Amino acid sequence: MDLPGEPPRKPVERTGIMLKTQILVVEDEIIIAKDIQRSLENLGYDVTAAVASGEEALKKILVKKPDLVLMDIMLQGEIDGIETANEIRSEYDIPVIYLSAYADEKMLERAKISEPFGYMLKPFEDRELLTNIEMALYKHKLERRLRENEEWLSTTLNSIGDAVVATDVNLCINFMNPVARQFTGWQLNDARGKHLREVFNVVDAWKIDLLEDHSTLFATFHRTNKIELRGLELISLNGQAMLINGCIAPIKDYKGNITGVVLAFQNITERKLAEEALAMQREKFISVLIHDLKTPLIAIAGYGKRYLSAKVKEEKEKNGIVEIILGISQELLRTIEDTSSSLKKKATLQMLKPETLELAGIILSVVKSSLPQVECNGLTLYVNDRPKEYFTLEEPINVTGDSTQLKTMVENLLSNAIKYARSLIKINFFREGGTVRFVISDDGPGISDAYHARIFEEYFQVPGSVKGTGLGLYSVKKVVENHKGKITVKSSGNLGTTFEVVLPADDEANEVK
Image (cartoon, rainbow, N blue to C red; front, side):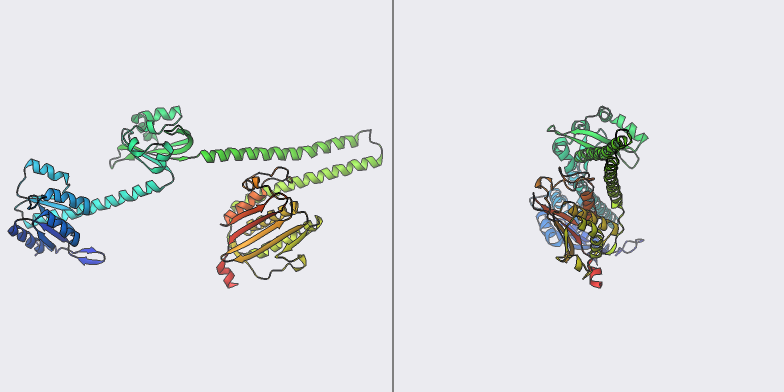
């Protein structure tokens, strides 16, 4: 029965079914065990069993899996209540409340080691029993939730791509995730307890001073809650160097006191090298562009000066100079237009406006507008194995994408083919499974295998190729990536070049059509 003034106890919900709290009683005095069982049942609990020894208790737990164990410290058998409780806690994670008629200091010290959830001296009242059980169940629930949160946090920190290091209030390390261990070269067991400066070995005088003393660092946190790290050189335990970016932030307790710091950082060595390489490519591009603009201007100036000089008197010679100046001017204008067009197309690469598009229609539109240039170069063009007289759209091929970007992609690939083809260009496009494939081939001199990995780099130009901006194939690759596709190149010396673009098909739109 419920205690006077107490509301009826609500059963516990387990796996969607409302069940009473299951309690195992471990008591070697039969009369006391029965009395405890009766009290528990009156309080609304379910006694799974009452056993007299630790060995029996462990066997019952395997079968019954109770929510809580009430156990006398002094038991029959080879193991006492404290030893049994240690195994129950470590193996089964079930809360234990000790029952004892004794309270000597030695026994209490032993009992503390097993971290019991309660300690009751016999005899006890039902209200005391109820209070201890409910407090033990509540405490166990909180501990389990805390462990789950810790496991979640540990899994998260160990899974992220950034290096993470945590310290105590004295800046001594107590945690390092796998990335931090990889970057620093330290194992957690070796680094634990060491000062942050010993493990986080950065080449920067100010940062060394800042991390030497926790009081200096904590004083900085009063002005800012986070300290940024930019372009530091980290030296690992084995002497390897890397450039890093990151930050240091304080760890605070509930009162706002700083109890340690967390340091997070990333390896930016490859990014830095890529930025430097890109800067060099841009510098080279600008240098080539200036040369391409300056050379014809010098020639124009020279021929203009000669035309105006008194030395040139015959009309025929003057007309020849004018023709040369006009030719150089046209070449200069083409260079400016090509550069301007490439830069404008590059600027559109981030302006993705996805919609359902007929890729076949875009391809044929670009092909037809390029026919005068194809014919001017004396080339033959086949689309899906048909000559120009039979260029028709038999079946729409739908993709989701940005029409401007896709048009840029086709224009750049076709323009490339026209530049290098000797006599023939072939274009094929078709659906295959859930993809759309666009293939363009030419019979030109081909691209050496040595340059296949670099032809899509920004500003890169194959040595000895037709002069350009180095942005065409870079733009193509960006468009393909923006549309979640892939591009491959097949080419070798003197055997022509084939580019294949594979894009996801808009199957829903294709079915509707």
